[in-house]
Image (cartoon, rainbow, N blue to C red; front, side, top):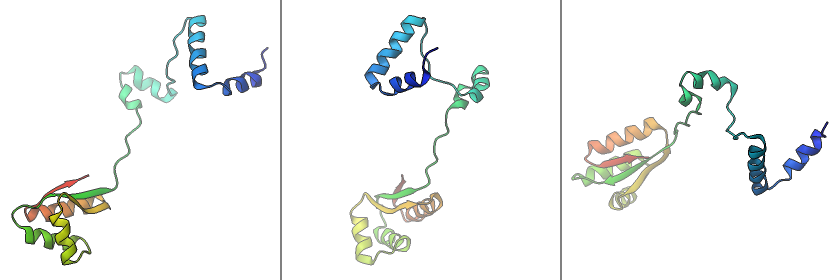
Length: 130
C-alpha cells in the first residue's frame, strides 16, 4: 500500500500550476471530470431542484452612509436639518450643504440613516443612503 503521509506531503508542495496539470492528468487517466464538492446536507435540496438554497446567505449591511445629493429650494432649512443631525456649527453645516454631493452621516444604523433621510427630504433635499 502507498505511504499516504508521503502523498499528502508531495501534494502539499505542488504549485497552483502543477496542481491544475495534475487535475487534468487524473481526469484523462480515470475518465472523469472534477466537480466542486457539495455538502451532504445540501444534496436533498439540490435533488429537489432547490440548488439556490445551498448558496450561502449574503451578509446584511449594518452600517450606512447618508449622502446629500441635492439641496433643493430651501437651503436654509436644509442647513438647519444638517446641524440638527450632526454636531456641526453653522459655518461647517453651510460648507457641507454648499459642497454637495457630501456625506452627512457615515457608518450609522439603518434606522438612523432612514430618519436622517426623511428629515432632510422633508426640507426639500435629495438624499441617498449607501
